[in-house]
Image (cartoon, rainbow, N blue to C red; front, side):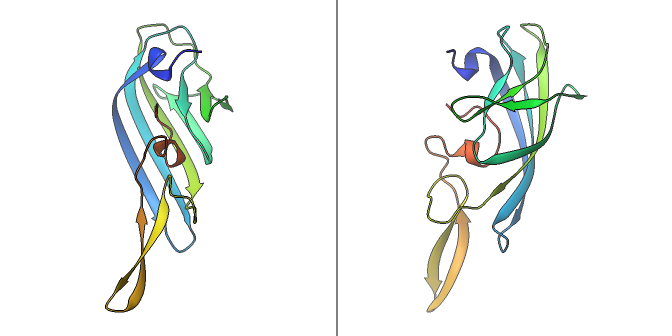
Length: 134
């Protein structure tokens, strides 16, 4: 199986996240600009995310789950074509799992506090937004 970069090469990402720390959830959108470099369908890494909509160059496309924490976009772009992929998604903030987006606790002046952390290593980004995370 090809690496995802052998199918689609991203040039830039625009990521927007809306985090509801109290409900332990987030919603977001990502716009990925790049070029299709293979005749295979575009695949992106995504894990533990709910995809609500996807479009390529402004045209809605369907999304299916693939193997290895991937989503497959139904598209018919020609090899060499530029593409702007837009995806809306949601996910959960996980406790006890130090990947993706997770809470970290600390004390300040004897008071327990919490902040949200990420390290996106080595495959943690795919748990927060659809991307190429290999």
